[in-house]
Image (cartoon, rainbow, N blue to C red; front, side):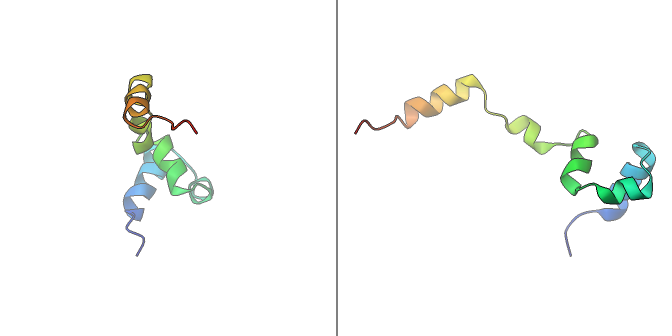
Length: 63
């Protein structure tokens, strides 16, 4: 089993987004999640402060 809630995804795609069945099935699960605004990767974007923190923590070695 894929672990995805297909009935729930179908309801969201067909009813909430108004997709036609062919449009729904042409999407990848990642595209559907993004269209629904549930993109978990959106919060995972690294900001400047985190980059600087990691740069201090793991400096490049000069060879």
